[in-house]
Length: 195
Image (cartoon, rainbow, N blue to C red):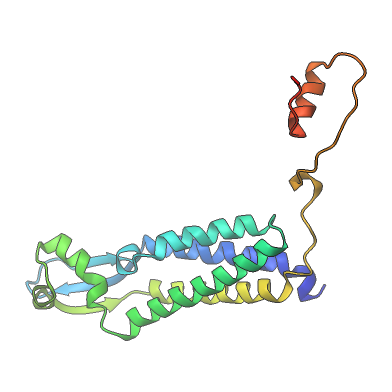
């Protein structure tokens, strides 16, 4: 089997895996903040460090589920959206790790200490230590980007969804009265059996 034949399954699994990693990492500690007053360390979860982490991860999960039954044009749109999401989240996560993440931790520090403002937060913070979760999230965004590239490379070769996803109208002629089973069948086809 070549990539074009496996494109759908690779893409769907990639989207679901990346979305799951994002959701799980949003609930885990991304940064540990040591305080100047020697009080207990402040733990900053991923959802606080990167505000769009949880919503976009949920969107990626939904895209993965919808990708398995989507039509051609929608596949292309999903692939483009997922690639943009992977790049945006990857860049944002990388910025948190490379730059000083004071902005990412300030909301949580303010909630714990009651001190607001950049100078007050800087006075409280002695050090900021990242956990493994931002790096795990980066792996998730790389998986999402690869899955998006697979979608964009193979979306035309995917087989169409089965008949169960079509809404073609089928005319059925009835001789005589319609019983309950025929009524249900007509409702399933999208027609009103009472007409």
